[in-house]
Length: 391
Image (cartoon, rainbow, N blue to C red; front, side, top):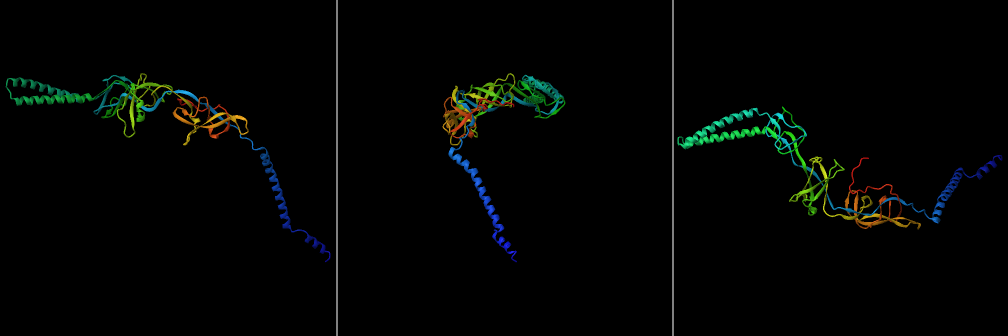
């Protein structure tokens, strides 16, 4: 029994297992807290002593505020129309007997284009003409007898009425035969032929289009507010996307004497020479109307302007000092008043002076007083009359 007593005493002197685990966990936790504290405390202390590093300059592109001469223009869009144009068709049904034109040809006024089969109509006309000639003979005979009082006036009136009736029937039949022939109502350029010999056509069937192309009209609309700036005889510069490098000139020839009550617009027509027939009816066109003498404006690319409801802003780059007091280029926010736009450019009426360097790319990254670095390797488009380009 005494042999086991010392062992029992040793067991009672040791701490329980759960307590030892808790003590080790506490020790590990304290070491972890001390380690993390050392990691974060030293950098924070260093920042408190030395301060945060200053921000790097922001890379931007700039454009100079420069004067340009702008002609006061009114930009409009419209459609080209022929001076005379028609889609030709026949008035009466029939079989096409002859076709006297080729697609795409030029014709003079009155030229025969097609002829419908008219054999039966001609035969009927011959019959009516024979009856008319007989009636004319009877009329002459009765007129001579009436002068000698050999017949009654009533008999002569019947003969005269019969002659007039036959004359009217002959004229009617001649009109029917004339409608069997389609002639060009005016000189012009023909389109694609839509019928062939032997084909049956009914009234209204398109035969061919005929267009007088030189000169040609440009019709467009202007709001009543600027009607005072437009007058007959003003020059018009017209462009169509078919010929992007060509400009066609003409003059305003007609201003409609009334304003549309629904849109408050007035119709205007310009006439353009078209000797080479490049312009075709139905083309969409843009036009510039010169309304005065050249005006000088400070211009910028439109991308340089930040448009806001409370005012339009630009960033002007000038020499200054950064956060460390070192010389640097600083972007300063400036309120400007803008004017009309032309292509990629916009006119600045106030807020800038000639020679100011204005941020044109990268202003969304800026704040007032930001330090910047200028890199003009990439510039936005700054054309008063930009043209589409294939890439």
